[in-house]
Image (cartoon, rainbow, N blue to C red):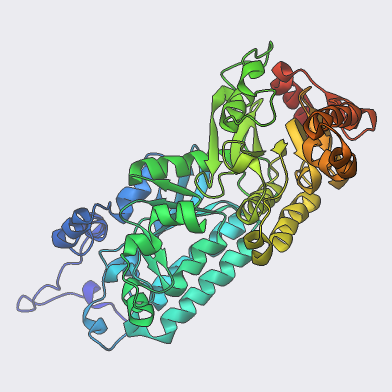
Length: 519
């Protein structure tokens, strides 16, 4: 059969229409790509700006190294009909998916585009997210979600809800396998909030991001309580009260910069070690300032952050849940170029006691470090668990056990450093030798005991003090006797429960050498 274009033509027969050549097709592709990035129009972009928010592509540009982001399924459109959807079929369907590099390492990401259907999730939208999540897990690389969506797309009904189910299932499947980071850059309501809750770290930005199961209107209708979106589920609320946010920021730029920093501290997956970076400051010599940071008086508070800053490379650390459960510090940093997880009591808040929120915070952090091959360094200055009916009735036994379980279950190198007091069950829980830490060091100011000397004397010598002519003088004498007998700095070391009593000034090089050996 002869092709029509090849056969001879008569003079009267019109020439066939010319087909676009490769140059024209390529120019068309570039125009379409530019239109897709521009979104639904200048008006939608301006509305995003009015809300104080960046566009999805601008956020991805901040997250990734320059010119490394590769978008996939940018031309995808939804297939739904009804409620006018068949007349509105924008490209991307409201979510940008792809991968790029962060500090030269591959990271997968998806970003809701609020300009399209308010970033709501429909069937095609969800399938794009499912695909990028599957690719991240298969490639063994971190996944970052930039969330700015209005929840399930109501017009698509149960198909949208099923899409969320697929996301949750993948969050759980990838948990502990690859790092998952949620960055909240807009509203997140209803069932959609469970995806961030299933990830390892949650970032929020004040004024633009909120998370709640039921919105202010529903709360008012059911309870009569009037509350704003920010009061109900804003960044400060979740960073300081609920604990749902690991980090909170004033702007998107600083938020995404710290996302990049966090990624630099984490491995690509649970089969790799975190990347090593040579410190700018050396490990040589003794740090004289450590003798003045921690008071010898166990009743005098101090800021444990000042101790951490002197123990880690370049005095730089990233504190997780800084404002929630502040009586326990959890931070990522480097010692001798290698990432470590630091868990430390904070004497500035509640004297550093353990309570329900601190136990949960510590347990979650330890489990993340254990999953991603990050050694643990525990700095101990703890007077015990917080007493009171509120704590007991709310389940301090259950929650305290979670912290204990996390330590006992961890298989990464674990080092304990006892700075001052370590009393009772809290001493055991804070990664003591008896629950399996690899090495335990103590400063010469350590006091390891069942309880403080004063409390112990009140129990042991109650009758003797009651019968004494001068009870207070007798109490002081007996307290010193107890402290000298059972709480002197070398008591635990003599019994093999502490590996060494070290010079506080040498703590950083001691830790560096111990971590090197345990690695």
